[in-house]
Length: 274
Image (cartoon, rainbow, N blue to C red; front, side, top):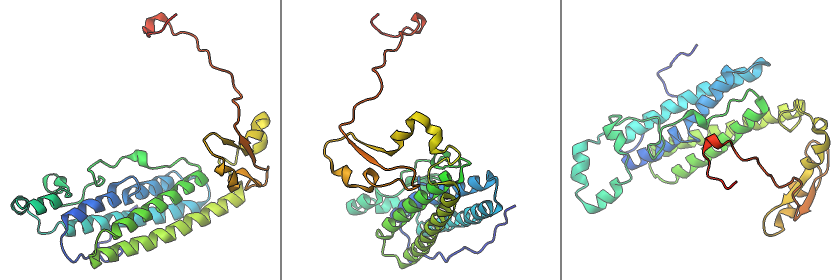
């Protein structure tokens, strides 16, 4: 059960309208790594979670918080669009310099949403569920969550540098701080699961089950010009789980044979030379 509370998690109060910034904030709302994505990702991971109750509870806690972040950004976009009318924009656009600036506004804010936020990115591309990961494997999902929070915090920090509005920056600082905590949170959860199930996903398919292919789990194949990649920890030393040692392979040769597929049935009308 969800219950809406009218107060926002953090204060949202802009100093002045800014339609161009409103468009930029749309990326933080409905972009691939926006708040809608983490909201849906955490909630669906929580809805589908089976097993230890603490993981489900954590996912529902943070997923519900992200609903609040979506609401905050919708309020922020609305405030940035306050006082903007179609007639005023048309009149202002008669000035060449203003017209150039207004080219960065989002026309859908006027035409489609009536000066409100939309579930889309900064270019008007609709948010879609393909942005989220909810596999049922907690370690795999939590790693996806860490990536989502890393990318999300990066994008908020970039938009932060695009404005001097202290009210907007205050909202962003709160979001950046929460995203930092969420990264800590996923790191802690990942470390706990790695300690319990191993570092490779899925832990239920152990290295010994790979049988004759196990040696390839430790080989770094140099397949591009240069040998600088040999200097990384991924090409020397031991695997994180201690099951083997890495090996650097310079100019590796293919192990398989050249494929020789059978011609398709004539009824497919493929253009091939028989």
